[in-house]
Image 1 (cartoon, helix red, strand yellow):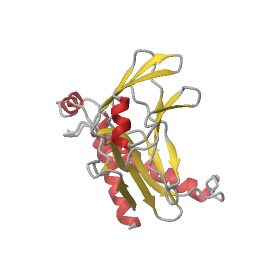
Image 2: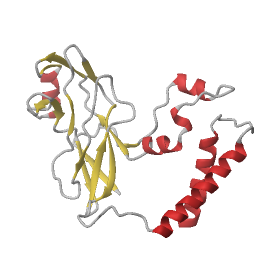
Image 3: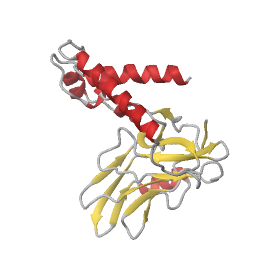
Length: 232
């Protein structure tokens, strides 16, 4: 469970992440025959649906402009300072290689021994490259920060109300005892048997018309659903 509080009531609540699919991709994916597009791929859709989206929730829009040599200009900076009541609300880090918003207005809390994986949003603004990280939200008391790469000279990052900043994925804290070990012979044989059955299932779909045009998606979905039923 992810709990949150907001510094200002008008900040948007975090929302479940959604895959970003362009109109062009939708058109290509539903054509006959369909073109291969990202949303035909269940692993991609599952990853894009992970976690909760945090937004730029201030009413003051800003533009961060790269000036070169690790320098930036922030339009509307003074107004954002006044709204947020944070002196260094936009700040350069690590010798000018990154920019951060130390206080997004969101405070997060997870269960003991659960942390928050911070991932790039599915629909970031142009020029915005979030730096992924893990925030220990089972104890961290300050507002949630975001860190992103400093824009190159001439590149502008525009942040306005409800621009996506990051995805938050709660996960168990990493255990030092966790290890990577080689499969046993029996496990490897079982894997090869499943692989052969999966390939046979793919072959059986050849020549059959699929509405989506993606046989791999069809079989993956079917096997995924069957596996979930077995393990629930």
